[in-house]
Length: 291
Image (cartoon, rainbow, N blue to C red; front, side, top):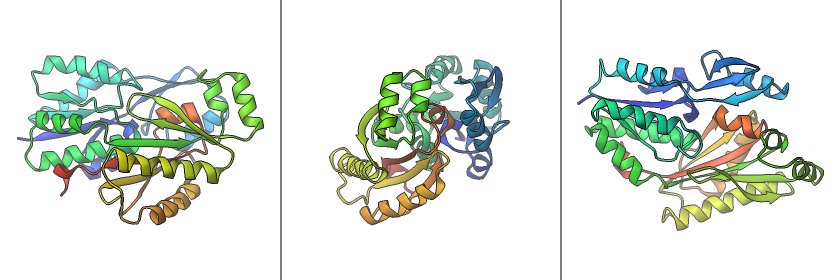
C-alpha cells in the first residue's frame, strides 16, 4: 500500500523541503492589489512583507477545486491513497471544500480536519508520513490524527496592532489605545480560530506569558510536567534573531523537550498580524509516529 501525504503551504513546508521530505505541498493563493500570487511559487516571504509594509491590498483565498483534485489525480497515478492535511477548518473554508471533493474518490483520498496550522500542521504531515512508512493506510492515518487533534497549542505575541485594525478584527480606537500604551497582545490558536489571550506591556512580559501558558497546557492537557513528551517550535514573522533568543529561553525552561525547531509563520496568518511577531507552538509527541 503506497500512501501519499499532502498538505498546503500554511504548514510552513516550502516546495524545496517538500521534495526532500517526500511530502506534497499545495501552494495557497493570495490576491495582492488585484493580482493572484501563490505562496513559495511566485511570492517569497520577503516579497510578501515588502508588500504588507507598503500597505498593499492583501486578501487570502483558497485553492480552486481544480488545483486540489488535479494534484490528487496526479498522485493517485503513483500512489494507492492520499492523506490530505489542509489548514484548520476554523481558519479557512479550504478544508470543508477538500472534504466535499474527496467524497467522489471512494475513500482513496482521506482529508484530515485536525485543526492545525503553521508548525503544528507541519508536524501532522511529518507524523502522517511516519505512519505511512509503518504500513498504515490512509484511513488509519486519518483516524489517529483526528483522535489527537487537540494535542497542540499556539501562542503569538504581536509587535503591532496595525494589521488587526486593517483587517477589522479590532476597532480603530482599540488599536490607537493599544499603540499609545505600547501593549504587546498575546493571541492564541486552539484549533478553531485566532483569539485574544492576554496583554503585556513589554516583550519580556509577553514571552513569560507564553511560556507560562505552554507549561500549563503541557501539564493539564498533555499530561507532561517536564516537557519530555512535548515538541516545541518557535515561529516568527521577520523576527529571526528574536526567535533564536526565545528558543534559548525555552530550552532553559523546558530542558527535556529536545531540539526546538524555528520556522516562519505561514502567510495566511501573517497577513492579519504583521511583521515582528513571535510565537511558540507545542504538540504532544505522537507515540505511534515515533521512528
